[in-house]
Length: 390
Image (tube, rainbow, N blue to C red; front, top):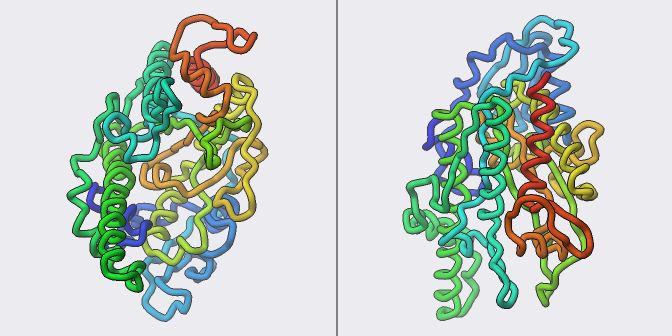
């Protein structure tokens, strides 16, 4: 999947009218590679538990047709022919020789624009991209020592994309005008609000859609890893006073749980088919469960408690692992596991971030603790090490 196609897919999910038509011919090499039973099982349990996609499907004994509307009156977009039923293997062998680490966000001069930056008084500013990159560098060293080939999608604070916010200004203006959001405002207020909204939209298209699409292109076309791990540090919403919080949790995402609203879009439906048919879920789940176990043990964090309308659904029995349709998971081919331990604005986490990286242990509120960066990297390396040793 080329960069133009990736960017179109992501922008389509943001509501742009500039997307290219979905190319269902990309699925032709999957003909007769999956049985109807396995297809329906993955669809119902992983990729669309709500059942919304089935409104666009017509099953026969040996095939399924997908349509652009729920009326199913137009010609089918694609007809997937099933293979004969076969007994599933007892286990899925893991091949994890090439591992890509994707440290989330851009950081540096772009951190404030991304809204991944905060500071309190004269303390060290906190940039999530810096935290993620620190962990990525430490983890790379540990995994290479274990014999893996490791690649970083970025190792600095520059965007991977060659686009910049101004490249999306015309598109942003078109989208904001089409929304008619400010049409009832008085003229001067409308002018001011429109200008600000255009700026924000152009920035969003740059640092979210274009940047993630560029990383996906790098992974899909150049690195081609056996596994991609997206490294992030979570945060909880501030109160009005921006007070540090006591809550602190861990979540691990694998790809899935396309929402009913997303199934209205051809691009989303196509990508669901692509991800389902590549059969990456067993590897994703095995890795996610292993990393969730070692991270939970190292951090002593509780799992995130998602509500029924959160967009996340429990995957398997591990309380920390959820399916969610994130762009970073969706656009990248092959198994992708998305990690979000810690809340940056938790009192203890913030204190540990302020200490920076260090070797050995330091006293933190009377408890000897590793650097938070090494705790994160060591836990991931331990979990992957167990899988690599199989």
